Image (tube, rainbow over the protein chains, first blue to last red):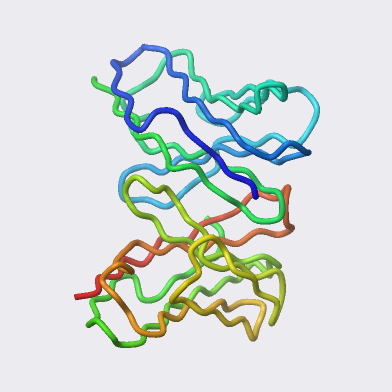
Length: 110
Length: 113
């Protein structure tokens, strides 16, 4: 069975700081990987996705993620966060059904 | 935003009563999903559908059933609601299976008292 683990439950940082959120998945074959964001009081929205090709994927709002097959990881990064990046971030893997990690709450202090 | 409507948006119900949540889409997407979101657990898949009358269980399906008689509607039923089913429920749709982006509804906040 596929599973997704996110390392950090809650991250607090100041504006302009760099952000990196860890995500590991358990399936050893070909996987399709996603990062979603949920702003306070809203539904989930797609940040970026990886299916194949260049392992460095760029998404919306300055986010990027790197797929490292040997480490079963798909970490999310942003070089300089803004207050508006305060949200919950979910890593997801889709083999034949879309499964999510527990999420990481990111709080950006102005 | 994708055309997904969840109803009701909020509901309070008593323990032991049946409850049905509805997800309606206007996108003609093949796949539909029901998730519940709870603090510390992220989103957990309850059931999903890959076509009309084609459904399968997710990781937390006990106490829930689903039906999909039309492409556009995916119903989630709590047979006999319990307090542990108090949660926020999200419906999602996807055009294809594994590689397509999933679009989410606004969620239904269900409280079982």
